[in-house]
Image 1 (spheres, rainbow, N blue to C red):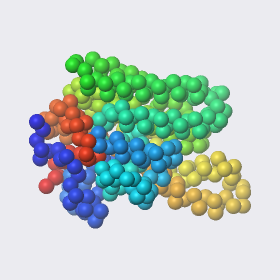
Image 2 (image 1 turned 180 degrees about the horizontal axis):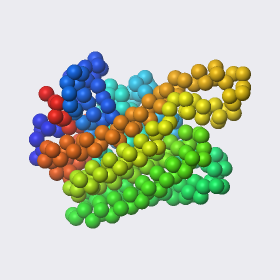
Image 3 (image 1 turned 60 degrees about the vertical axis):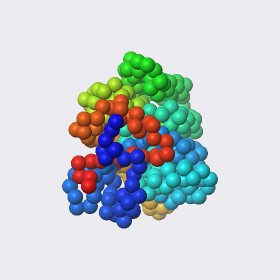
Image 4 (image 1 turned 60 degrees about the horizontal axis):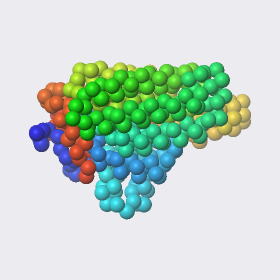
Length: 341
């Protein structure tokens, strides 16, 4: 059994209150206490997150994740009847991670839930379908951006993730986890290449969004396959590689580029008399979008630290993941950091 003082079944109400009061703050999926050096806690997703993410997705099926701020999640909570889902959404709202929960990044180390992956793959697939006309024009020069090739790789991503999830039910799951990890690495490489190519030929940063999510899902699931087989060094290497890839894609994207991209889409050029006022009008949206990209980078960068903490505590990856997968009431577990009380 895992030490109950090491992993909590929920983020304590007292900690959530301290977070709301600013005494505890979050960077990526890591919690820090004001004035205290070191990590206070690591946030980890559970099975209890499934229904919360489904509720978020239903309320924002293919919209920009920037729209899922604290206020937006609060509005979704108001329309939810199920008390357990309400409680889960309230936790996401308090910790300000609603958008990240719905994104390909997820919360901490992925538990590889086929239901969760299905919701997310459906979402990004719909985003690509909405972009078909734009992608078709670009695909004339970039073969990898053909709509049929993209949808085929979404099927591969869904299938590999389902196999990783199914492995938990097998008497000898490790061969299937290893096979899924190899397939997911190839899918990760394909979506990374696709995102880089798209960014090199188009100024529309919104077009890259679904590919970043697909890359993130492939990487997160691959990392979990390595954790499940007890190969923590390989999992840490995979997590560090993914964090570097995501930074490579997102670091150059700032608020000004996002706003300029939107104006180009709306066919508003710098020569137009209303360009400056239009740019200023878009500034709050662009800053929020850029902030979400920084959040994703921080979330990816925190995963290797969480895995290193698991190794320091002497926890076996599979046993630790089983605890998270077995939790259905709470959406988040808290792995205590070295600076925890």
